[in-house]
Amino acid sequence: MHPLLDIAPDVRQALAAGQPVVALESTIIAHGMPWPRNAETALAVEQTVRDHGAIPATIAILDGTCRIGLTQQDIQRIAQEKDVWKVSLRDIPYVIARRIPGATTVAATLRLAAMAGIRIFVTGGIGGVHRGAQMTMDISADLTEMSRSSATVVSAGVKSILDIGLTLEALETLGIPVVSLGQDPFPSFYSTDSGHPSPLRLDTLEEVAQLMHAKWNLGIEGAILLANPVPPDREIPSQQIETLIAQALHEADSQGVKGKNLTPFLLEHIARRSQGESLEANIALVLHNAAIGAQLACRYSAIMNRRQPPQQP
Image 1 (cartoon, one colour):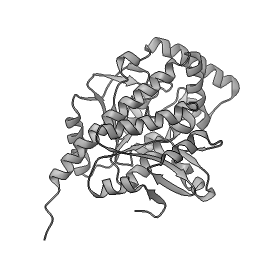
Image 2 (tube, helix red, strand yellow):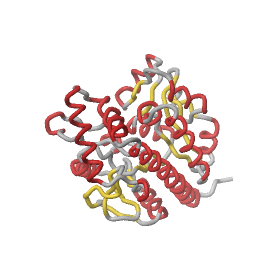
Image 3 (cartoon, helix red, strand yellow):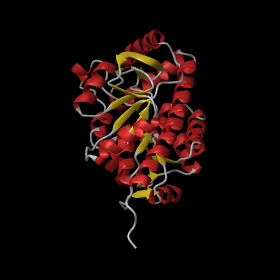
Image 4 (tube, one colour):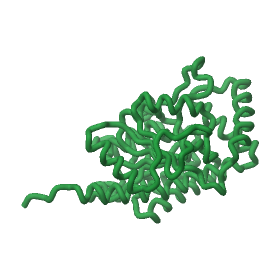
């Protein structure tokens, strides 16, 4: 392990024993939800992972080290402290060198999880190609990092604020398997159907675990995207969310909001205009993803433990 990776004792023990571990991002704590729902949700997600048989490893950068597994005190700190840096892949060395508290995005969490040997990563929705990217070149580092780091990313698809069609095209170009769980349509974060067909479909987590083993056993590096649709009773119809997104994009443009500040701005605007409905959907889908991710981690761990050669005396 790298000396700048500070792995929590329970996570380290689980990894050494081949037990299931699930990585979790911290940007959702610092930049995705208001206090105190952010801390409450983070703790609930960790408990959901435990309830389904795996060890949670929330990842962040604190005091100059990459924390793989946080204490409750760490989570409360990230949830409340001002000026927590939103850490993408390019920011990791800067934040470490400056000893700035940092909440990791999908790209940064995925890289650090892979460095620690964690094969399952749960998030809400991944970043991708932003609308109007042909003019702005605003494309998330989540995509390129998924082509490099070998872990399965469990999400409710791509964030609805993005150009989902172009994001799927980019994922294909990067060679990333995109699998929808139990349905043909590709989900879009708040909604179960993005209007785009899913490139691949699998109906059981055992099949997903077998796909993971086949991919990496062949030496094909990079992530797998498992699109787990939001629970139907919590989804926001796509037409309704599109109206809110259009309003949020117009407001962001009028205020000149760009770059890493754009996604938090849009999500906060949508939550306010939906009178909290989008926030509740966000929480529901993250908890659902955590349950699925933990179950998948258990199945993949079982496959790997069965296939390990016997130890020599």
